[in-house]
Amino acid sequence: MIFGRYSVKPSTGRAKKKLVKKKSSRLVPLSPQDPTYIQLENHFQDGWTHPRKPKPQVHAIFEILLTEESSAAFLRYRAIVENSRSPRDANEQLLFHGTIRSCLLGDKKGGTQLCEIAGCLLCSVIRNSFDLSKCGQRHKFCRFGTGIYSTATSSKADDYIIGVPESPFRAVLVNRVVVGNPLTRQYNAKEITELTSGYHSVNISFCSFSQQVVGVPGAGLNYGETVVYNNDAIRPAYLIVYAADIPPEIAVTRSRLVKQTTSRRAVLLKPRK
Image 1 (cartoon, helix red, strand yellow):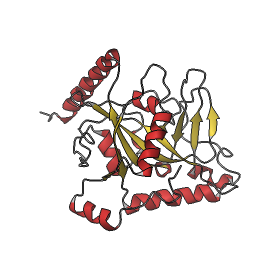
Image 2 (cartoon, rainbow, N blue to C red):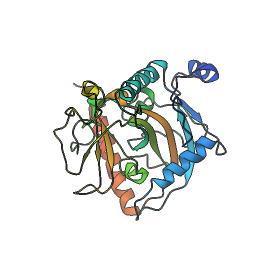
Image 3 (cartoon, rainbow, N blue to C red):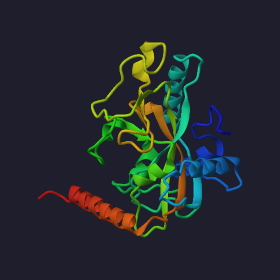
């Protein structure tokens, strides 16, 4: 892929000035003619492997701008992992993550304003990146324990997306994930919060800084996923917005989930007497 080693970068120059004027924005729309757009679209389509889910049409792709602090923390972490491996390679991958979108972010190709809705996890991740402490709040079952989950299968990430019923689009995050040297598992390991030494690098002193699990298909897991246990091992890099062409029975189920989520949110926000 064309994505450069240091293409995860803080906002600088013109982009930084835009963010100063529009603090809630973190997105830069990419042109369909942009080589990055083309390769991301191919990456998304190649990862769409569920046989009963027709490949959707990409509507828009945005680059996510990181703050200087967030970018620096990720690069420091990646350097630690890289220096602990031989040959020196952090095994960084572009992996997908689906979550709740409670707004219409990305529906308009120039619409880059992040919302302030408490339950919009998409805008929260774009604004603040991922947070291990929130693992399990949405799904009680965490196959590989308390971690941040992503996958190379875009159609699998799509399964975890809850969108807004009035939007014809869905949105998935493309993330830079420092995978390092993963422990490969085929069976559930819900108790995992960190890994034992030896599964990341030959230098076990760095193991606690670079812990991840790769779940491979088999034994109840049909599509692979990757789990990291350090907030700085992952950063949202791109947002892909695509057509929400899903079977009616799935749409009904997701509509119920949206209503349940909205109902729970209303209870949480209701003032106490």
